[in-house]
Length: 398
Image 1 (cartoon, rainbow, N blue to C red):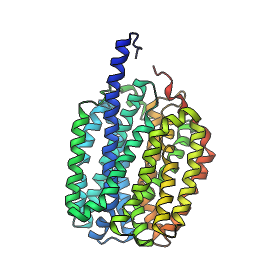
Image 2: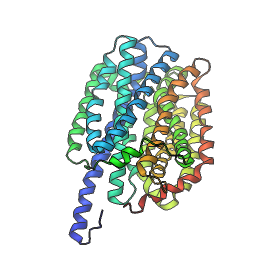
Image 3: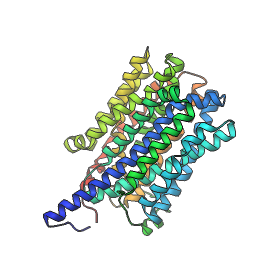
Image 4: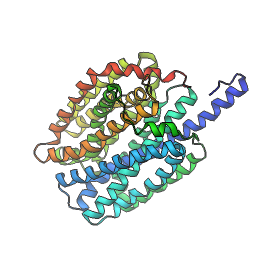
């Protein structure tokens, strides 16, 4: 894109992309709201279907299968139609699924509902990240951390209000309210979404997996950064309720405390990266994640556990956006290809790890699980030098 040379043009260009940035931020908020609202519904879902921890783990595995099946399909459709069209369709299909997982009355219906919830949520996630990359390029500056901040903010609102709303309105009333709010926000965002062009050449390239180890190693950073996030999202409420004797309303605050810390730090993330650089920022965040998970796993009561989840949220806050930015800016590799590898590996952590945790929790405790998950940060620390590629996000793209 050619630079605009006159002041009026620059002002118009800035205003236009402020609207597109607002739109993509709203999309992240919607997706986060839905996922956050799911966190306090998990115990209700498990109770309605009489699921043990192992059986719930299988259900969460189905959630992951749905996401990883529909995410590549979404990627192909983005190359064909552009991210703006795909994200709108995916969001419209995703939002009603929160009602579907509330209405189930059998294990098989639950499996279908959670497959669609995970799959369509994953499809929307890929499309909104792709749209954020397009907005980043158009603005010639990094916005990925702040976009993920809006996801965390949505998660905070969904998780913090979920237990209270379920208690006040019932599970179905809560689901209809969340879906209504999400649809209203989507209608507002639709008029401002950046309309990007399809990338047919990139669509052909997606069929070829990169041979360079670099995108896979950055993907490993994303994977080990997102496993703790998935563990807190799907098991935090049960951990507080079953092992620390928290009430249903209070148990939803596990993910809420995590999301609050993540949202606050992600809003500051782009400024921190500009000042410290991506490598140093990633290292500091990784240490905080390690410490927070240890505190949460060894907590003697709910208050200490919430503090631990909050510290973990501060750490994990910018680990994932840095990995995504690095994946989209690998030298000699098309941005879409690098990003697709990193996002697929990363999201497999948040999708599949919780189901594995369910099986492990049958033979040990979630306290042990959170303590063990903290060790993944040591691998991220060892690979943190790869984050230098994230600092290229401000460079001009042709």
